[in-house]
Image 1 (cartoon, helix red, strand yellow):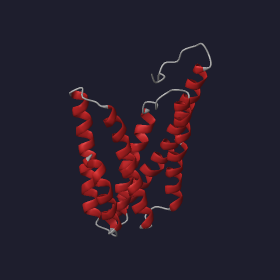
Image 2 (spheres, one colour):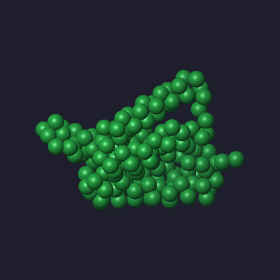
Image 3 (cartoon, helix red, strand yellow):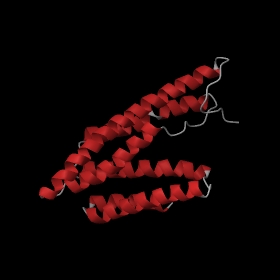
Image 4 (tube, one colour):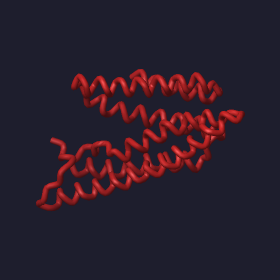
Length: 184
C-alpha cells in the first residue's frame, strides 16, 4: 500500500522538477517491492490481493513517470501512446479469458523483463535530462532500456495473446492444455 500511496507524490515531485526526491521515492518503492516479494516467498505468505496490487503498483509508477517525462519533454508523446496502447490492448485478451471462464494468465518472464527494463529506463532518462557531461551516460543507457523495454512489452502482449488463443481453443476441443485453469 505504501508503494501505491507514493505514486501521486512521486508524480508531483517529477512535475515540480524535484528529481532527486522523486528518484528517492522510486528507489524506496523498488527496494520495498523487492523486500516484500522476497519475504512473501520465504515465509510462504503470498496473497491474492498482493498478486493484484504488485503489478498494479508497477504499472502506476510507469504511467506516472511517463506523464511526468512527457510533460517535461524528456520523452516524446508517441512513446507514451505506444506504452499506454499496449495496456489498453491487453484488456482484449483478459476480456476473452474471462468470457471463457478463465482468470488472468500468470505473468510471463518476458513481461517481467519488459517491466524491469522500463523501471530502469525512466529514472535514467530523468537523470539524463539534466545538463552536464555526467548526464550523457544515463541518457544513452536510459534510451537503450526504453527501446528494449517497449519492444519486450509488446512481445509479451503477443505471447499473452497466443496463450489466450490456445486456452480458448482447448475449451472448444477435448484436449487439455497446461497452464491456466477455468475459474470455479
